[in-house]
Structures are given as C-alpha cells and as structure tokens.
Image (cartoon, rainbow, N blue to C red; front, top):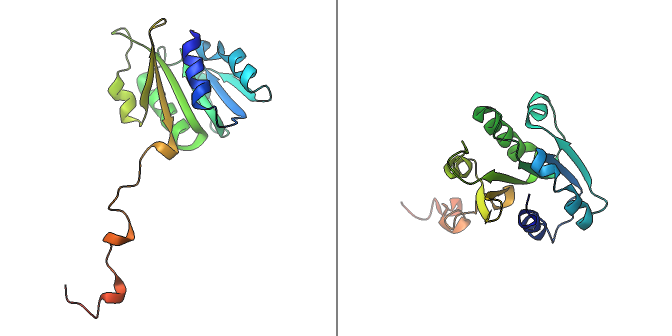
Length: 159
C-alpha cells in the first residue's frame, strides 16, 4: 500500500487522538507501522471481514479502516458490515478500494451508505472513502425555531 493513503488518513485525524483502531484486511494491516509512529499508545486490532461478520457484538472503535477486505466477500455481507460499523461501532471509517472495472464496488454503492470519496492514490490505483457520523448530514436552514409555529400566538392570530 502506498504511503499516500496512510498519510491522508493520518492528516485527516491529526487533531484527534484516536486510541482504538480496527484494521480489516491485509492492506489495512500493512499500515499499522505508520499508525504506531503517529499514535504509539494506540490499541490496534486486526481482523478479517469474515471474522467481524461472525461476531455478534463488537466494541466501539475510534477508527475503522477496511482495505483489501471487501473484494472476496459477498457484497450484501460487506454492506451489512459497513452499516453496522457506521451506525454503532466506529466514529470514523475509511475504506480503500481499487480503481477500475475489476472492482465490484462502484462509487454509488459507497455514496448510498453515506461515504464520501476523499482521495485517489495514482500510484496504487486505490480510492479512499471516508465516513464520519458528525459530518454525515448537516442541519438544514429551515430546521430551526424561526420557521416553526409559535403556540403562544395561537389565540392571537387566525391562520
């Protein structure tokens, strides 16, 4: 795996101090030395997608990185795993996928799950996708009290 993807992940999380990491897949495990250089006290767990799918409960991770783990597992199973990590078990999720027609995952598949494409590594031809719950959906302008009915005015004005 090229250093560019890991540099991007480290730069994205530079202001935070993630202490509990989940690395899924061989390519993700290859980035472990880079993470330990930046956060030497971090607890890093490695796993495969099949192991995670078999587990009934998972802890909450600060960051989950999936790389080289999604190509050999059924798309429906990986979709379920990503949704589970996204909703309950990870504050930040990064997914690395190969660019090209041989990959069964398309950009719209990850966009549908709320992921944003962050970068494409030209050297290794990997796409980096990112999901953070706090940035998933911004609050619309109309969703504030200026646009709501005011119950204290119900007897004063006729609508």
